[in-house]
Image 1 (cartoon, rainbow, N blue to C red):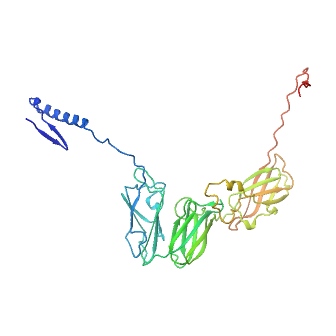
Image 2 (image 1 turned 90 degrees about the vertical axis):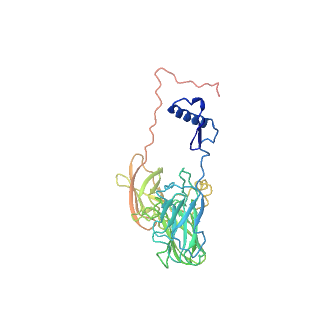
Length: 399
């Protein structure tokens, strides 16, 4: 007599030889038989190839390039579940830009979909550019290092005019890789278009309506998408008809003026003064703008004051692909070379004062710092010869 008991997909057989055993023993035999069968059956080992691919966008709704649409929200659909906490950002809404801007975008997560919308809804008769920045990750930590852009219009047509440009950190003489740029319509100042600069400082505002704009770019050091008082910025006016190209030379607007932060000694008649901010090129100091005063109140005559020469060798040896990307105007100096008529005396502290130095927005400030020319190292005398020891005799044989 046989008995088959199905447990899931497993089948146990009553073995006649054990027919005389108790019910408890029968159960033990059945369970043991299932375990042995499971161990003996070949199968695919658990797990599989490691997932190292970043999430892919498989659809965006509405489709890019459409006009005459007014969706409740824009949907980014991925090929897998994405993380609610992106890499390098505090939240998902930090990964999305809606242009024109309406505050911080509303961004919602739904496993393999992310929805984006303005806080006060889509404006009528407006062309929108929605940018997803790099940083989207899946739940295994695989991060996208590229972004995505989609365009649609709530009006009947999408304009084709555009503004292209590049943001420079002018004081540093380099591109601004963390630049954020705004294009503000002068016809309707509530229309503020926004774009992020790439790693080479380049940005673009595609599909703008012709008209007058103020283009403002800044270095968003803290990634809060707002201009803070210590962040470099600049703006230019543009009247857009077809395609316009602009250059943003961003620098810090410091209403407190610039001051000396360091005085270094190049030699006994040459000092280098370093300031905490850039100096106005059109109003560089003269010899009368710097005084060098000794402890006895006597002054050392200043012969000349000039910015240091540009280090062309360092520029030529810069990062590959970036060395050619320089602002059209040379970076403003942050240091001055001061030449003296007479050498400084070693071991004496002098007071170096810079008078009415102008920064890039024309604010003047005076400041001073001490400087001391180090005393020359003491000369150690040769050890004395012990008494009775004759000096060495030159070997006339050696040549």
